[in-house]
Image 1 (cartoon, rainbow, N blue to C red):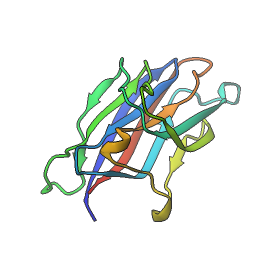
Image 2 (spheres, rainbow, N blue to C red):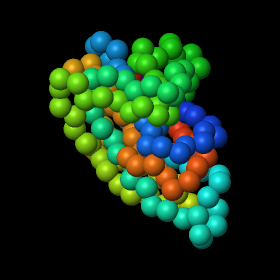
Image 3 (cartoon, rainbow, N blue to C red):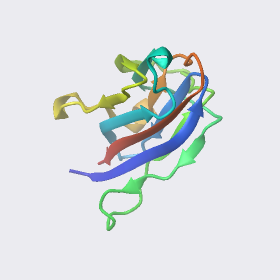
Image 4 (cartoon, rainbow, N blue to C red):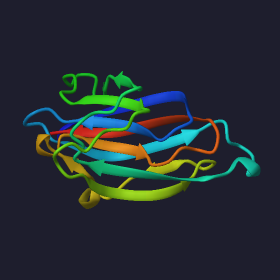
Length: 157
């Protein structure tokens, strides 16, 4: 087992399609997604419910923009800092570039209940420097502003 990290964001108002997480592995250090949690705290009534599509995608060549760099937090405080880079909530989504992307997972979720993604070990997405990055993307814009928070658990090997 490699070193475990979390990447998170809190209380971000989202009005457009975004890259919730953009994770780029370092050379010789693949990353594995263990779990992702997305929740919100503004759409609490029946009338505000909507279904949104979230995707886990590998292979984007260019990072998005408009969000923020995120510092991965070590699960074990004695581990070294992460080698991979992380961004959250880019409002200009990542670009394919010369290579091809692979949609690893696609699912609709009810914003009122949030999205929890905990794949079994055999189904965890792995990304190496060859595929450049793995992105967790909100595919389309919500009907109105939704304040999201999220955490992604990442292993670096």
